[in-house]
Amino acid sequence: MINIFFRFWKIGSFLLLTVVVLFCYANLPEKIAINFDDNGNPVGFVSQQQFFYWTAGVIFFINFLVSLLKNAIIKLNFKALNPNSLWANQPQATASLISTWFNAFLAIVNTFLIFVVLGINNINSDKNQMLDFNYNWFIIGGAALLLIIIFWLPVRLLFTNPPSED
Image (tube, rainbow, N blue to C red; front, side, top):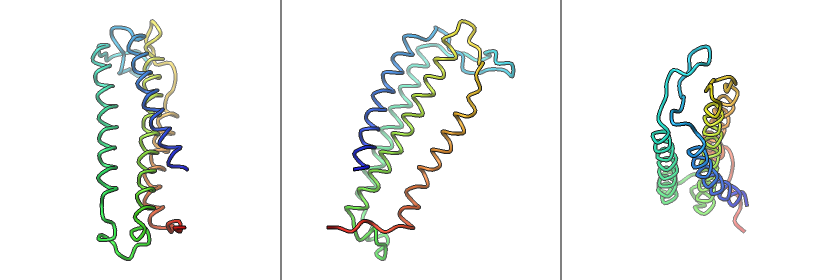
């Protein structure tokens, strides 16, 4: 059940991220401020097209690479790697857990990228292009959430038993 939730969240966040990038592309000025000095004044700019292509490329690359990695890891024979592991002796449960983890990882990364693109849009939507809002809490929260999801799979595999097969 949780795998279905994360799968829909992953697909929905990817679609929403695509819509947000397209919306921001149409809404952003020709020069997008990406670097700021200590006073919040812009000092570095990229063109609108360069921002769009780099953003779309990074989003596609991350989603494609993580999906390939997920498919490769699910196909591994864990019983050959560690025959004493309870998880390795239940390949369906292990595949489901790994699939759920990768779906959750991509869902969280895509959701974080949605807020990053919206933040860039917010900063650049004003005529002054000033960094007048502190985004540090967002970066710290995103990093903490990413650390939680990264360590969730190893902790689950090492310290829990797989569900019993009925």
